[in-house]
Image 1 (cartoon, helix red, strand yellow):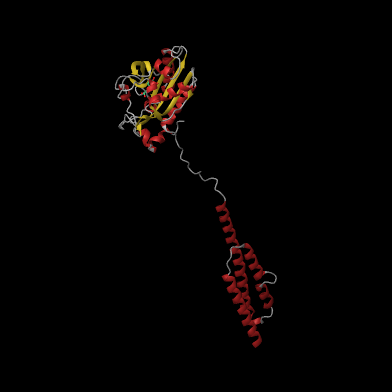
Image 2 (cartoon, helix red, strand yellow):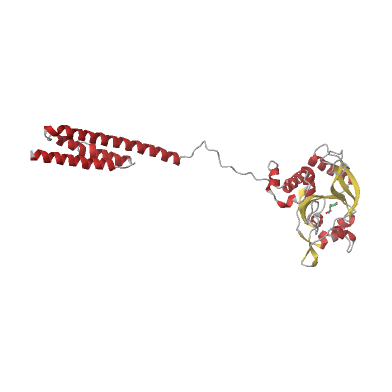
Length: 352
Ligand code: DAH
């Protein structure tokens, strides 16, 4: 009796200890779960051994202990199954995290845009490149000779007042160039005709900033020097330019003008890009807008640059890139070109 009672107590103790271990076991590692299964339910497992020892339990306690034992086995089996399921769900989740989701939309890249001045400058360059003009550049800090004197601006001549000049360090000889015409002097000094070139670049004038004027702006200078170049060539070239730049319907007209470096000089108008010539606020109801200055290169300028004015003639022209861009895109305030407001710049995203 005593013996069987103690056996029963030992058996119940063992069941309870193992039950506590089963209940407290936690793992999401499949190997650990399998080891746990073998330790409990394997051929030599703790629970399996309990079943072996169960034979020795006295008959009257078999029912109670048998029930407990069966419950323990079910508990252990369930635990193993439950942990295996959890582990496989966790694995799936981990894999999902590692793998890129190919259905996700790509990161949005904000497209940039060229500045309208660059767009128009590139267009002008390519229009003239198509008829054989090469690009030349000169310095923005110039001396009096290249900016004025060689271009036939006499000393103290009022023509110099047309261009409010920035001087560098109070040296009257060194200035910020007031126009890209300085580059035609540099080109002619270094090349003998035929010369066919355009020179885009920044120019500087001491002017108050407003919707219509700025102290920094951009010009393109054009120069063609060869034997027998005539005003008819000049007109034809600029007529071609106007149609390429503003469309094939564009009309042109030339008005007499004055520049110290050309004789004769003219200004070219085009039919208004907004109303097409019928009259609107942009063209002040004239139907025409001014686009550039031009003329036949003054023989004095050719001679100043060591080009024989008896043998060669040439024409030149100069235009403001801001002006061309303003007419092309109907921009009524020059300051917009310098403020770099993205709301303005974004409107040129589609243009190359
Ligand atoms: N340099 C002139 C200006 O800045 C523009 C110009 C006029 C250039 C006539 C020329 C020209 O080459 O022939 O206003």
